[in-house]
Length: 132
Image (spheres, rainbow, N blue to C red):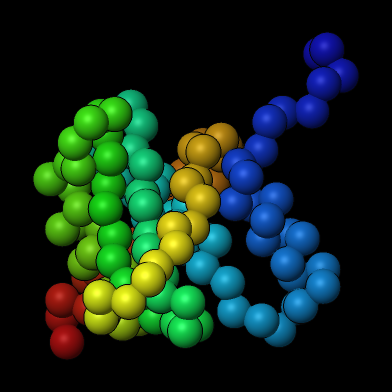
């Protein structure tokens, strides 16, 4: 072992920082990571960047839109799958045309254990959501 810390996902670091100051405040960092890891496992893509847009007035489980990028130039057809995953997690997706900002991407720097947990969580949420 070199003694160096393993690089961590920027969203997980952001989540820990937010929870240390605002422990009861909702954050969607874990959901962005879990959907990203689920897409990578389910569709066998080497990397997927899940871009989540939010209006400045949105909070909690409200988002303006989602785009998945698997190549540097084009949105990927995985965007509808990620949209369903966020809906299954209880999000309301509404783009009103107002200004938005993008949340950071999940860097994908997670353990295999975290990836398997994310897959099971998202897959279960989708099964429940579709079964309603």
